[in-house]
Length: 357
Ligand code: NAD
Ligand code: TYD
Image 1 (tube, rainbow, N blue to C red):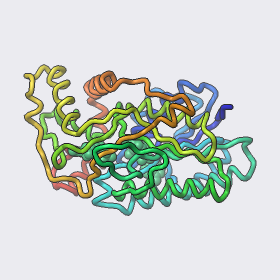
Image 2 (image 1 turned 90 degrees about the vertical axis):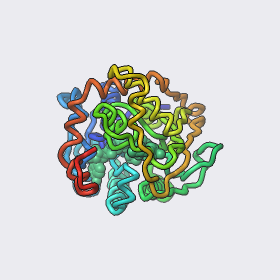
Image 3 (image 1 turned 120 degrees about the vertical axis):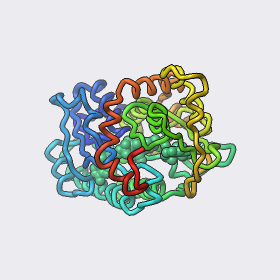
Image 4 (image 1 turned 120 degrees about the horizontal axis):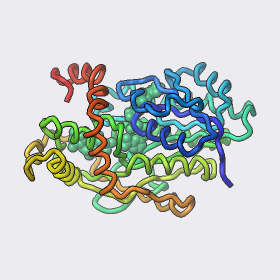
């Protein structure tokens, strides 16, 4: 049996993963209306939504998930039958220098969204309802050299970012256990792809290589991340929304572990070719820098439950996905200039006293 939403509230739809989700969801669900609630922090950019903005089935609302009255009004007036909650503060490094906003947005914001969703669901205005919480494998903490995170792995978050996401996940669980609310919770590995803000590793590398700037590698460069294309993440979220039993949790990942230094070398080499630089030239930009505080050593996701229960598996190979991503950045330099100006530049000036990286 499948749940077919007719009006979804997407939060954080101007960010990296939310905007990619809106593009593919709108294309694949011609009868569903999408309301995008985003307060446009430094990470939110309406340029990510070019192509869908004109649609009569799309509406953008600039606002905060923590604004209960606004959320309540949207749920009621738009007859929302599914909430897909991407909005968050998402960068680990920022959570180390300024954790408060992470708690405010990721924990308190989520609680407000849950509470308004509960009232809306219980009002009986819509015949069926789902609340889907987008989360991260980082809530499980860090792995040693072997093993994988399953949905049963205890939450042992280590950074202020992952702790705030774990707090939100527990609230989602509480709303299901306490009120019987039809919640869903997905936990995905590291994403890459178009519209990724260039403070995260892969887009930062591409941006800095193009501009011949140093490539900061934290610590020994041997930390491991499990990379998934953002459109594969979106497809998995859609599958869970439509097919999963309320109350369930699903890991999302593509079995694609890379040591950071290997990713750095790969991106350097692919860009040597594309920028017609000498073989090995970009690798000379690699600069080992002080390690991130509390840097999780390894993440690796076991997504077999999602595959077995709901039949999802990734469509992109990493080879194809990373090549397409690099080509997208090369073709969209204007987008990069746009998002790295304004408040991002101010942030870097405050943090580092220089220009944006
Ligand atoms: P992002 O930082 O690119 O985008 C976040 C968006 O949320 C922005 O558009 C921002 O303006 C908006 N936002 C922030 N605070 C808000 C508020 N109070 N009210 C309304 N909007 C607000 O993040 P992303 O990388 O797209 O991540 C989206 C979600 O996926 C997050 O919940 C994140 O924890 C999760 N996730 C990310 C990854 C990853 O690799 N990036 C992996 C797994 C899970
Ligand atoms: P990031 O993209 O910030 O994602 P997360 O911390 O959520 O996994 O970082 C990915 C990995 O790359 C992580 O191990 C930290 C490392 N890293 C660097 O070595 N240099 C950088 O400049 C950044 C941003 C990250």
